Image (cartoon, rainbow, N blue to C red; front, side, top):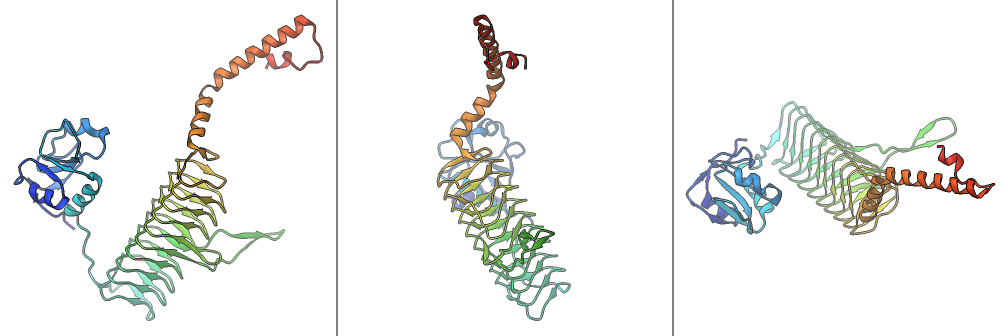
Length: 359
């Protein structure tokens, strides 16, 4: 869909609830980054780090925090600049309207049900008992298995696979290439071979969840793997069988969550975090990138490193590691001095210094 607009600065100030410093009749045709914005575009400053870039910008107007200083107008000052930026982008780039109907090339079971206001794209497949809610959008090349429920206004992008028995809530967004409901990784070794444990549970994704591209969310062995309301999952994440992720959790790219682990509400898992199985991550815990979690983590704390420890402790360890070469030199020097003293005193039977000093 083509961008919307243009708008005057007065119209933008009213729509964003912002205070305008400048000509209300100036016309703005679009939104652009600080570095490339032109005189008919608006840009934004939401972090002090980019103040110098904002001062040098050629943008026709800037959306800034209320307390921003040292910037030339026109300015739209907002108490909540991040929230205002979202509204600004939505004004110029509104979501495309859902065109109701089923594409002629889509394959629908006679037992599948599609709401008259929903859209099913080309070459998609809906199996027996699939239920597509009002204003949901199923993109081309999507597979929806038996008994799957897709809530109203959900969006499934191309090549998403939703296997049997999965329930997807309202306004859920699932990006291209993601697989929901694949078998969990469960085997039992019988002394000769690894016997597959049937994975007969399901997956529940609650309302307002967004799942990135090429994510895998495995079905439960029994019961359900659950991603609760408002959680946001980045690209290339693995969520194993029987995991339960709480509400409003942030899961950044390349995280791996092993089976039966529980992640509390509003927790944050940084990029490439790995969680072992059967753990509990407390509500509001924040785990830094590339951390390895091998035990339960308490609520509301920051963790880093492998194994994950409280962040302050990990920083002290990192600081000590930087001094390690120097400390080794000092230890070897002291070992040599001890060895020399032992020889002078004629001490015997000590492991003290000679062999270590020659290492």
